[in-house]
Amino acid sequence: MIRRLVYIALGVLLTLFAVSFLLSSEFKVERATEVAAQPGQIYPLLNNLERWQRWWPWYEEDERFQPRFEGPDRGPGAAMAWDSFKFGEGRLVLQAADPLAGITYDMQVEQGHMHITGSIRFEPGIMQRVVWDVSGSVGSSLLDRTLGKYFVLFADRNLGPSMEQGLANLKRIAESKDEG
Image 1 (spheres, rainbow, N blue to C red):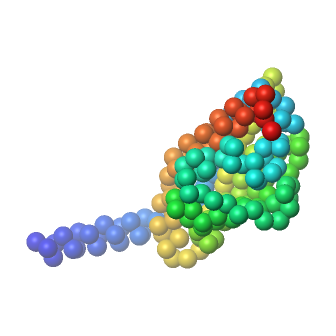
Image 2: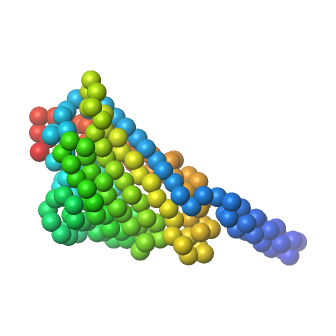
Image 3: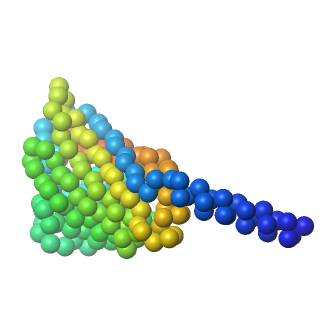
């Protein structure tokens, strides 16, 4: 009986391992919201990483999230590194920042096992549309190429709610009288 259970467990593991080679190692998740504010009211919350604590959901989701800021205060080259209980070790660096267009950033998570490129951009309309997108890929080790692909399979479900919360926070702050 135990021998049979071991064979079944091994069969399941081998099947999951084999299926992982058919899965994509890349993902893309996008969320958007309408904000009754101009880019000039939103941009300062994005361009300065120290101000992300006011809206970035990781601060809410892990009370022990403690970033270390590096480089310039704002704009390209501004960086934030962390070692978090929930989100592991990571680093985010602003790559581009434009007051009328938004920002782009690169993020490494878990010592480079996952690379993410993100942007938060402004799209004009009757109300300001703010679009946050992230795309990335799992690392190149055998473990990343197998188990990491299962994260990719559920990336939208895993990342989407945090992005929605972050955009809701950003909207609330930008539309308030005290957006600074």
